[in-house]
Image (tube, rainbow, N blue to C red; front, side, top):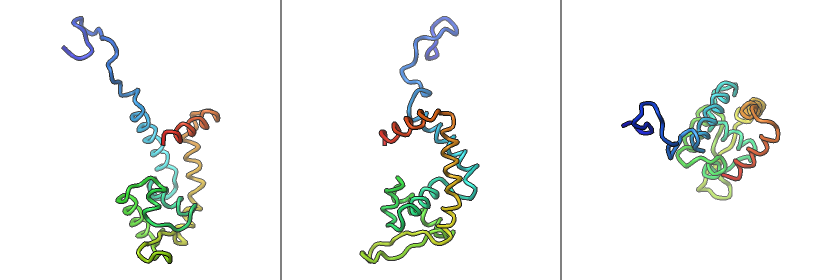
Length: 151
């Protein structure tokens, strides 16, 4: 007998114990997919969300170690290394020795990286606005507060 169907053909039993459509992870993934689609369409340049996160964080904070940048952008060591390698290959970031600790490299924006970050920022703001557009202003504030609480 098929799960959820009684002996009478087509008559369903009670609700199953796990309904995927009601799970927070599944809903967050769907929202992320929607946001990623908007991002890809509207960012205005060939940047991934993780590349944009690194560029925008460097524009915000200035030079920092690759490790620190990974922490600030919620990327693991391997991910941030790949992101910085790709941005450096495009001439958007560069590394230099940390004057306070010669064993550590600092990542910083190049002039081209700074210019791109400034150019793309309005698009990124518009992407956030569109992602949140189905919500009323108070709902947007509440959603952001709740998501921040879940971090």
